[in-house]
Image (tube, rainbow, N blue to C red):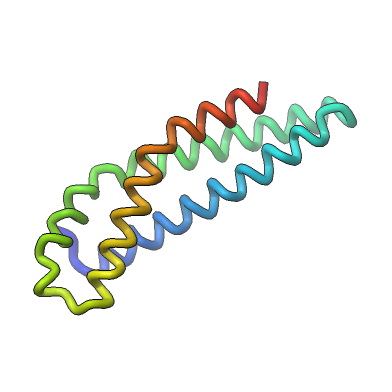
Length: 114
C-alpha cells in the first residue's frame, strides 16, 4: 500500500499530466492556425507535439497501476484525516478521468496533426 508521501507524489504527477494535456490542446490550436503560414515550422511543431503526446502516454502508463493503491487507501479512509481523504478522492477521480479519456485525447490529437 502507498504511504501518504507516495499519495502526494502520485497526486502531483496527476496534476502535472492534467496541465500537460491542457497545454497540448493549446499547441494543437496553434498548429491549426499556422498550417497555412509556414509549412516547415509547422512540421517541426507537429514533431514537438508528438513527443509531448508520447511523454504523457508514458506518464499515464506509469500511474495506471496505482489505481488499486488509491482504492485501498480510500477504503481505509477512517484511518485518514479528512484532508487526506479529500486528496484520495480527488486523485481517484483525476486518475480515472486520465486513464479513461487518454486514448480519446491521443486519437483526437493525431487527427488534428494529420
